[in-house]
Amino acid sequence: MAEVVINEMRGVVGEKKLGIGAQSPVRLTNDASVGVGMTAAKYYELVMTGRVFHTTCVHTTAIAAGHLLSAAAAANVQFILWNPLNSGYNLVLLKCGVFISSGTTPVPPVYHGYMANGTVLTNTAINGVFNAKLGAVANPVAGYYQHVTGTANTGATAIKPVRVADLQFSAGTYASLAGVKVIEYVDGDLVVLPGYTWAPMWAAAGTSMVVGYSITWYEAPV
Image (cartoon, rainbow, N blue to C red):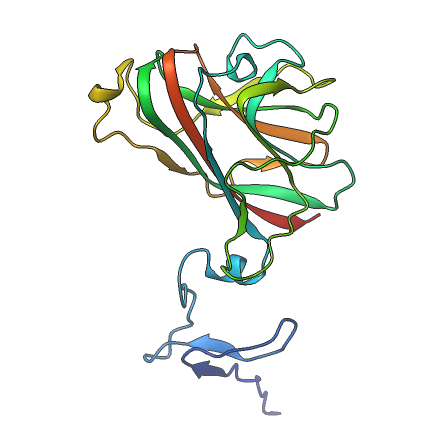
């Protein structure tokens, strides 16, 4: 009977530093198990591609009409992230932040919303846009808009709520908000396709609200 030889899969124990496209044996742990865990941190590999970005801003007036569930098409918006048509990338949302500085909050919750792109606004970032690989140039394909009072997103469809955000607020004054959750790990369960816009939404405008937002996204080739 002929002997059957099965090729043995071999691996290398420990971390390695490889260039993009390099071939390598599988990584093993010290007990010879296949290493499938993160070798650094959760977003490390994505960040090191240079395609993860952060932007944040604080507004000093009430929530603009474009961020309300009753918003009409082309209403004023304060904080949006859009994906230009034919960008060649999808915007994968990783984290979202909504933080209150003062005022009386409306009845919760906060929502994730989307709409078809309107007239492309000029990229405006009050506090800048940053590459998550700090020190690298921030050159996202995404469009972003931040404005204190809001500007009409001309030609856009009405914003639609997609789902409730995993953020914890209660209706009341800022003083009653101690200990609330202001950051949601979206972790890619929302992806903005080319030609569409993401925006945060509220049920109502609140009173004398000073509210800020942040968004973190990864640009994945289509």
